[in-house]
Amino acid sequence: MKIFKPADIMLPNCDMHRWSVVACDQFTSEPEYWQQVRSIVGDAPSTLHMMLPEAELGLKDPEAESVKINATMQRYIDEGVFKTYPDSYIYLERTLKNGAVRRGIMGMFDLEAYDWAEGTHSPIRATEHTVEDRLPPRIRIRRNAPLEMPHIMIFMDDADNIVFSSVTKGEKVYDFELMQDGGSITGWLVADTEKLAKAAEKLGDEAVLQRKYGSADNAIVFAMGDGNHSLAAAKRHWEEVKKTLPESEYETAPARYALAELVNIHDDAITFEPIHKVIFDTEAEMFFAEAKAFFADNIGEGRSIDLVTGEGIERLNISGLTIGELIGKCEDFCKAYTERHGGYIDYIHGDCECVEMSQRFGCAGILLPRMEKSELFSSVMKSGPFPKKSFSIGHGNDKRYYLECREIR
Image (cartoon, rainbow, N blue to C red; front, top):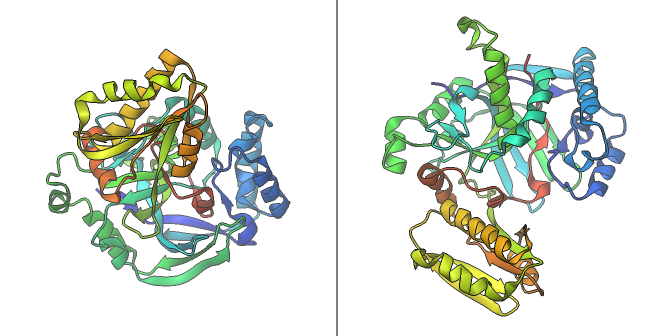
């Protein structure tokens, strides 16, 4: 089964700096960021006009915006804004603000190979819990949209660099600075698409999976990096469309596939940052004692978590849990603690920030360990998707910007 295929990729004939905008789920608490984006873009053709930033959800009517967005997409198509590169992969290099270069390949993934359900053995899997309530608005937009413009990033576990070694650069199709400290991005058509397709297919070979994970029975070929809810919505939409088609049209239906960027989890520019847990407005006096009791069956040599209150910091060494199970157990403890002692949980980036907040009056927190890249695939295989807000992949400015498009109807 070929999971990652070349696609009919559409790129705009316009000012790319104003066209390309960061994903709509970034900077949700910073409306001023999006005001600056609108100031930069103005009335120019832009992906900004084809989406609604989550920071503005409470300010606009989602239904009316959806109609407006779809009309804009169709107008761009009708006015010849796009040039289509048929049956193509695009190899890209994203230079981040810190100077690191993240490599990726744009192509389309077969949604028949993706599932986010607990216990699934599908080749493409979610890495974090999928919130079903977040899917209907996304499905509604996709159902009526003529285009998709993804911010989805999907990981491969390719320590031997099989896939990128197969890439031969062809025509350069974009090269520009991204707005708002996003760095820069350059993309080339892949000259030999068949060679790349075969290299990607090799990742799913039974012998390769056996060597990597000790068994091919429950092995993951691709794992979600960013945009899981968007991919889940695309899958649900495909399931709707599939019911209306004869079986002979399944393979070629545009809705069966989703455009996304394939990234090697071993890329030096990929960093995983833990997202710590802080309880605010609680009675912190019993935090240490109750945490030790909660984790009593798992105390032993392994990874460590730090418990933090105004009284200080205590370390617990935990054994017998995958990194995903450990994060889930910390979440369960924090929820149980707030039920007994009041308060609410927030999810905090940065070790120093977590410690400072946790040591305030009426606060307590848990510093979680940093996840090694090699642990992501193995943890999902052993214990399923991580809980929500388990880890972060880079900062907001480093997230994927909308750029490439594909027709989905």
